[in-house]
Amino acid sequence: MSKERWTSEEIPDQKGRLVIVTGSTSGLGKEAARVFCGKRALVILAVRNVKKGEAVVSEIKKEYPDAELMVRMLDLSSLTSIKDFSEKVLKDFDRLDILINNAGVMMCPFSKTEDGFEIQMGTNHLGHFALTGYLLPLLKKTENSCIVATSSMAHKAGNIDFTDLNWEKRAYKTMQAYGDSKIANLYFAFELAKKLETTGNNPKVTAAHPGWTATELQRHAGLFSFLNNFFAQDVAMGTLPTLRAATDPNAQPGDYFGPAGLFEMRGYPIKVPSNKRSHDKAAAQKLWELSQELTGVVY
Ligand SMILES: NC(=O)c1ccc[n+]([C@@H]2O[C@H](COP(=O)([O-])OP(=O)(O)OC[C@H]3O[C@@H](n4cnc5c(N)ncnc54)[C@H](OP(=O)(O)O)[C@@H]3O)[C@@H](O)[C@H]2O)c1
Figure (cartoon, rainbow, N blue to C red):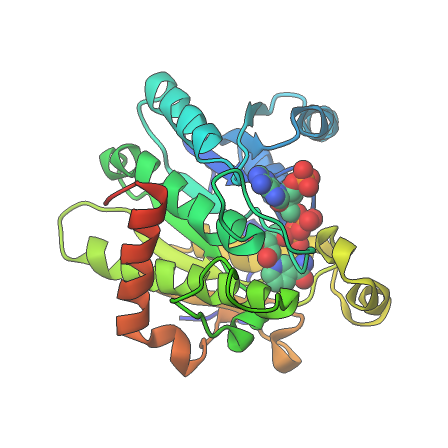
């Protein structure tokens, strides 16, 4: 199914469709929002910094004056904020075609979310877990809807300690915690795809990673930030796997897209394999149960 040079040209007109992109103030999220605006979708920028979001709206409007987009406050490190955001969406809209779970933090110093979760697992996985659970009824009502999880090559370093998800009993290793959150994104995508496949008209769940893309993500990782100059691809290329995962009609539930080039660092998006551990069904189920317990969102 993988075409050699899939580009955003392949995305059909999205008029009448609603797209939510989390973390659309910079990097991949901003670019995905821009592309969907160009395809005439109604786009919600789900962001923690509304001012930054409004600047993105102005920028996109300059390119697409007729674009339909809005900024809504969503802080994925707060279950209260996630609930508020979701309740407003459920009240204001009668469809949701594409949910792009994109927002993320990488290698930050140890801290906790408002609800006491380790910051990377809390933001990257648990926040999106709760958000998706709240929005699922709307996605289920919408024909051909899709949920995209954003993972990373760093999932290969992921090895979650289920006895200490919040790093309370161990010395903190920020790279390990990032890898854990990114394998969690894949456990989530594969487990939800499996759960939804068994019943009627359900959203398709896919996953993507951008290889190595120059964005603001590396702000806490000086060396990676420096190496961006030599290895990273630009944000337009880095966003293609996400866009393909969201719109390719041939994508199947559980498909994972990433760049086709060496070590999946750069290139056009194709279906890529994830590591063996990411397909550990028992671990995925365990994470699902723990995520339900911690967030209080059960689905
Ligand atoms: N760039 C890469 O090479 C790379 C590689 C593998 C995977 N990824 C993944 O790609 C995704 C996007 O990253 P990016 O590279 O585009 O990084 P980025 O430029 O730093 O963008 C991250 C976005 O997430 C938002 N965000 C962070 N914490 C949030 C929170 N608590 N609530 C709501 N939004 C929050 C940021 O908001 P602010 O603007 O307010 O900070 C920003 O809009 C992440 O999931 C990342 O793990 C990126």
